[in-house]
Image 1: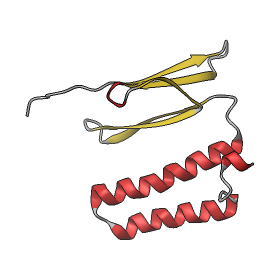
Image 2: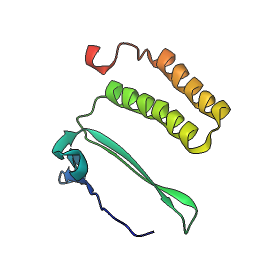
Image 3: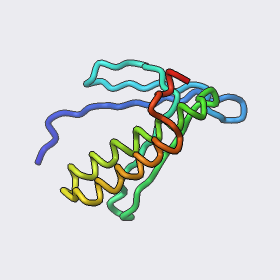
Amino acid sequence: MAVKHRSKIILEVGLDENRIPEEITWTATDAGIENRPAEAFLLSVWDDERKEALRLDLWTKEMKVYEMQFFIWQTIRSLADTYRKATGDDRMADTILDLADYMEEKLELRKGPQNR
């Protein structure tokens, strides 16, 4: 099957003198997003040759702990949806959601990062 369209997603990371992220911006050409600021990103790529996930997780030094907790919680919730869509395995997707619910309770995330 021939590729009919290419789309770009660009992540740019500004580093301090110690190579610690100070700013992150991202661009998604098809979504009309250009140089939008972000405080963190988690990137996973499947390497089919090695049969393993390659990961890159970065966040700025200004990101607050409760924001990171909320970000990870939201990511786990969305992973449950992705897992369900990709595999059709409702039982395990629900187990992933159980973990997210447990995190929400223990970290008291209901308020959201904007209310802390």
